[in-house]
Amino acid sequence: MSRTARLGLFLTAAAVLAAALIAAATGLPAFGGSRHPYGDRAVSAGLAHRTANIVSSVNFDQRAFDTLGEESILFGSVLGAGMLLRLARDERKRRPAPGPVLPTTRLFGATLLPVTVLTGGYIVAHGQLSPGGGFQGGVVLATALHLAYVAADYLVLKRIRPLAVLDVADALAAGAFAALGLIGLAAGAGYLANTLPLGTFDQLSSGGLVPVLNAVVGVEVGSGVVVLLAHFLDQAVEVAPGGRGR
Image (cartoon, rainbow, N blue to C red; front, side):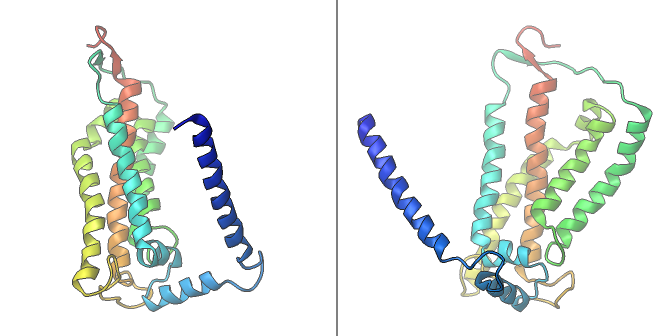
């Protein structure tokens, strides 16, 4: 296909997409108005399934299939980074020298690490009740582990970072999200339909499938972010050109 033909095809597709977007935008409720049809339906559906946090209801119940795609993108990003940043033939690993850390920084990091782990776990576990959830809590959990790098050095982070375990946990959690969708099919409903017992509203066990998917995503995001950062940190701190490794 010639360059002119490709450009014409692109402009035609862009014009069709722009027209569709403009038509959709003109049908939206006025900004700042009192009419919110999608919000009304989302709130009603979330409350019907005993999910107090409507955002989590949308993510893990009403549009769980979309969230499966988002989680798969993160998993693919981690997998791709791992393949691209693997040790090349002309590279060697060197032992990084420990860096000096102020005592106040060390104390702050050591104190904050368990608090951050507890906060991340709370955000994941209570995602169906209050703002947060698996995506947010997973990032907090990954951040907690890397406080060891900030408060100590890279060697300490490597000692407490079970990278092989987290690598497997990332893959298992990503697959578990897809597998949990089969529960709805087994119950005679749609894929990823919320068919588990809904529990009591505003209780930790409420929401049916929502807290289960929240937990799975928390594990996948937390593990994936740690593994992703590990590849970049290894590349920056340990990897040296061939012939200079120790």
